[in-house]
Image 1 (spheres, helix red, strand yellow):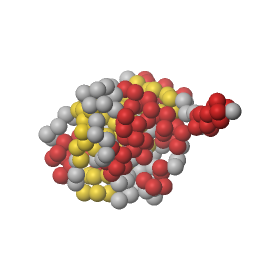
Image 2 (cartoon, rainbow, N blue to C red; image 1 turned 90 degrees about the horizontal axis):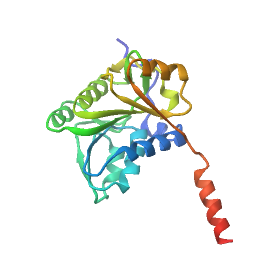
Image 3 (cartoon, one colour; image 1 turned 180 degrees about the vertical axis):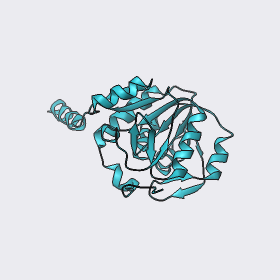
Image 4 (tube, rainbow, N blue to C red; image 1 turned 180 degrees about the horizontal axis):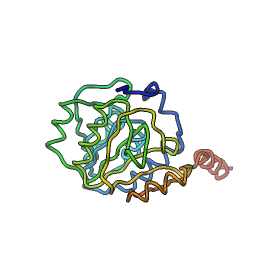
Length: 215
């Protein structure tokens, strides 16, 4: 079986894609987190954006398989960080394999935030590597609430042939550019869909306001 229908992009290549949408998704996800909670963060650029938002969180524990999240939170004293080690995939900058899976068996979480390369109402979420899809399935079993963070271009996308099936009660957090037909298909299967609104000019408006105030 061919494992990839398209070449897998590196994390570095994907970081700049749909930047404003990822930021809006990350802000919404961070607002869901409550003090005292235990979180599990996947690898990926959108989950990495969430990790950045969590730098201001208070009294939370974050376990992660992603180097981006580790780098974002390594110096934050109010966040307790657990690294789920294993075999590093250079393209995704995430850990996979039996060591990662063994660490998961000893932990449970209030919330899980997953990244993905594609979302399908029929199949679940898509990745390039069977080790990734297996790990995401195991991660979902260890968390009370499961969120998939994916900007609109990933909905209905099937770049690879390896999938993670998820239980029906997960939440997709995307942006307001999502195809309504795909959203309807997901909701018909019991999946909650949250659509955030990207604000690409927020920084410019803030700067303009500061200039105006100082004038």
